[in-house]
Each structure stands twice: as C-alpha cells, then as structure tokens.
Image (cartoon, rainbow, N blue to C red; front, side):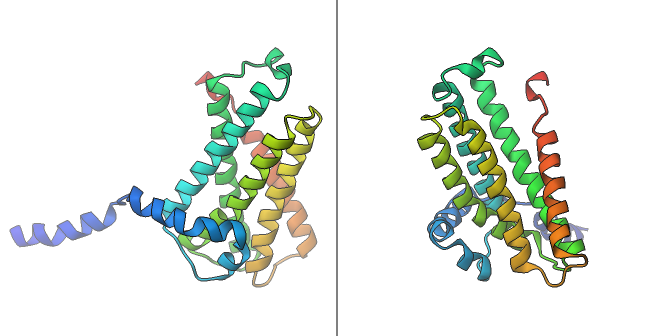
Length: 213
C-alpha cells in the first residue's frame, strides 16, 4: 500500500501548477528589450516563455494602461468626466479589469480564428508568448499617446480611442497573417468580419459595471 501511495504522489505533484514568480520575472526581463526593439524577430523565432510569464506580462500591461487612463481622466481632461462619473480608485480598478478582459477576449478569439479559419494550430504556451510580445510595444505606444498628447487636447480623447482600436486590430491581423497556413474563406472578409466581432465583443464586455458587484 505504501508503494502505491508513493507511486501516486508524483502524478499529483505534476498535476499542480507551481507559479515561480522569480522565474517569470526573469523571463519578462529577458524578453522585454527584444519585444520593444524587434518584436517581429521574436514572433518569428522559436523563443517561448512560460504561460504564467505571458499572463503576468498581460496583467502588468493592463495595470499600466489602466493607470495611464486614470491619470489622463483625473488630471488631463479638465475634470469634465467628473460630471458623469467619479474619477477615483474604482475608476482605476474598473479600467484595469476592462483591459484584462480585452486582452483575454482578444487572445481567445485569435486562437479560435487561427485554429478554425486559418488551419494553424498552436499550443497555448507558444501563441500566448507571441501575443504577449506584440502587446508590449502596443501598450508602450498607447500609454505614450495618452500621457504626452492626451494632456494637451480634449479632442485627443477620441483620437486615443480610435488609435487603440487601430493598434488592437493591427495586432490580430499581424499575428493572423504571419502564422496562417491557408484561410478557409476570402481573406479580406475573414479579417473584416473578425475585427467587427472583436470590437463589438470587447465593447460589450467592457461595459460591465464592476462597481455593482
């Protein structure tokens, strides 16, 4: 009986996911420079990081973008938005959660798109690596636009929103075109329809009022 018990223990240990924060942090530091300077080279290479590391990167990016949005609306929008909603800690939290949902919905939809409409199958570890890598420069550029230009003109609120949609769409088109094997349908209508569904989906999901929970 003891032998059976010892035999089963390794299986139980293997089934558990052990999150090594230090290792994930080192992987993040190791890929950060290349992800900003030459993301295409990383995407085309066989460089793969852990699933936990990719999730950590997307979580950090969500927090950074949420913080930049908070600073923009709190100090760079002349308090105009305060007439409609309170710009406080809950605004920061809901903004961050909205981006977490946006990244999650974007990844799931991209995985399904490549698998069912592009005949390209990836492991989650591989595709998450590529998805996290291309979102790093996206988040950097988006935050720069918000912080350095958003404080100058109120009209740039609309510009940053459109800019985000454009970049967000470019990320998915880029990853789809780089890794597609053979599209099942017309490529133009596949991408146009996909981006329409993605935009509507993320807009509806981000409309959830988390403060009501």
